[in-house]
Length: 500
Image 1 (cartoon, rainbow, N blue to C red):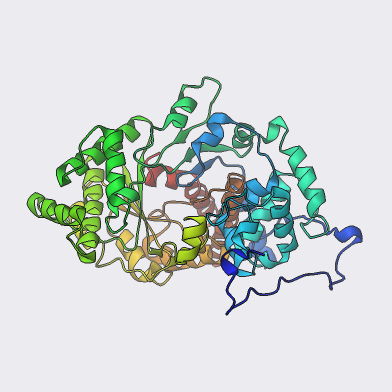
Image 2 (cartoon, rainbow, N blue to C red):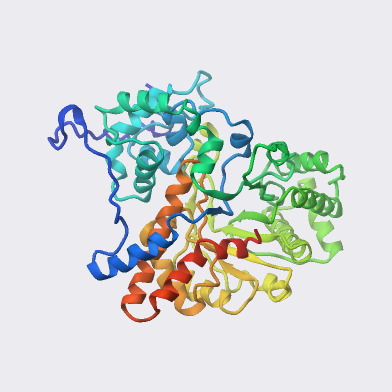
């Protein structure tokens, strides 16, 4: 049998674990699914009472989602979800990566496999694999989100298991056909006030336009300008990307000045359709600011193929510097999601493509790396950047001091591998004493899983309630001040940091 990316005769896939030997289930393997109402709140009774009050004060606030990866097509077309596997398992790399780590091949999780021309695994089989391995998610942030999705959003009352898999699949498939579970109805039920998508600069944003022009649609969905494909000159498909940008903008990208004009053109196109931010992923946040002649010569070497890897990296940093310069002029917020080794496993990338769970964090440095950009734009009132990291060691050492001086710098929420409850707590402990609460950009869900949006925001609200309750109990802040802070963290701050 094809074992996906785990097929290695020298290192065979681990045996799939089973809970069949454990006698902990009721009849038919049914265990209740009932997330505790005090989950993530402090265990000490007096602090828990404070945290409950703080959480209750923000539990029903509108959801402000300034960065995520839900496709606008989902809401524009408003088609019913087909089944729970394609909704909750296949698109969620938090789920697929952990299952893969335990020996479940990617091609058994619904991901199209370039080595097998046939259709991906059937949704029911994908769902069975997920339910069989449900216990593997214990202790993970994903488990909390999925429990909330299943229970709070989809009305599931028994835990997934090998025994309940088919029953749950049928129950959820039927439920997802109902009008109240279509994407637009869920958007309203989730209390989303604004949802930012992530979009290629060459995208015509047709689905965003369709939503904006639909008088029956009251929601707000805004694009985000994500130009990585056109800035990363180290990638082999970079020349082809420039051709696509030229077609979208109507501007020749055959020289450096043309590429810059084309990027400016598409930024303006996005701004006219509601975009307030750009988003950038790179190994680091380094920028260059070469003069026009030197930039053109560098561009020519890289575009012609005569330049080396260092030239390509330098050009990438130069183009990121251009993005900072443009933000200082047009006011679009520059979100920096850096410090990731993308597509760590080449064979998984080849067979299943990117965003399939094998991006790995890198060690980060910001004090020196950000200086060229901040010395030019750090005190410019038009310029604003939100800096994210996957390296906890820089929270208090570098990022909090930077945000504690530069009015343009906001601290991005714990992101990706750090968007877990205890990592969020560590972030608050590390940055607040230096930068306070109001140099923070609030919470981002950064999700492709539409139904995880309310669950992730709820987790963040609970964590902040717990953190603030401890400060109230220690008489560092009053409960009235804590109530103001938690409201601002989940309403005012994301609006301010992302200029929504």
